[in-house]
Image (tube, rainbow, N blue to C red; front, side):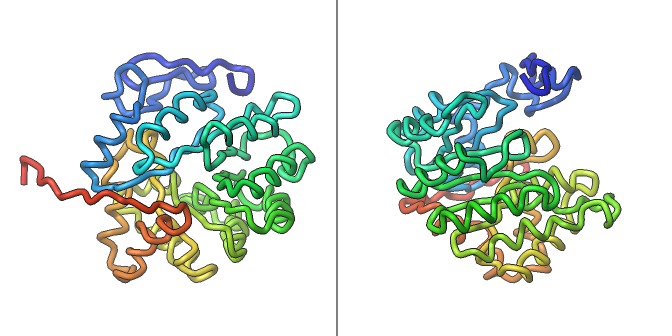
Length: 292
């Protein structure tokens, strides 16, 4: 349920979302299930060695499945647990999820009704800091939640925080005065344990489409604010690949002439390897397409 309306899977990647039929997943996911094995096939093809899997409230809780995925593929996935934030004393769920083997937690904060610095969330954040659990979080547009998250970061300085959706940077057709405060989200990465990841950036710039020159522009602008070593690539797979392929979600960065080879190396892999602690990355050979 979301906003009092049911979210229901149909077939061929379609869903009923807020009363409307939408193409929520790629059409080849005919049963509405993006399994770990389907994702691994895409990762192998695109030569992506490892991925962080977050959760979203609109999908329901996926903790049981993702705990199993983490157990079966420890070198390929870092999966995030997620609490039922509508439940009382939900911080205790974080303790249970840690005991189940989760090393990270996801919070789609843009969908929460409670403040990030509320007592129960602060209790959860302190527990995560004690157990060295990473936080993957997405914020509402602009700076509406920046002050709250800043308080969390300062209260829990050892908590590793990855802020998603690249701060909800302005899409190219958005009038500049509507959301110029996205930079405030980016500036949070000036704290030592905070990073910005770009999952969903191709969704933000979908109207412009590949090769997303404005997305490259905001990546460079964010690097000027906090340094390229604080920025990480993300895809927001599988929803973003209703419009593009998984490889295209990073290929526009790889082929850009506006970034140096060292900047691409940091953004597309090295920063994430260090931040998330991936130690045993697989080597994936390039397999040419039949059409080449």
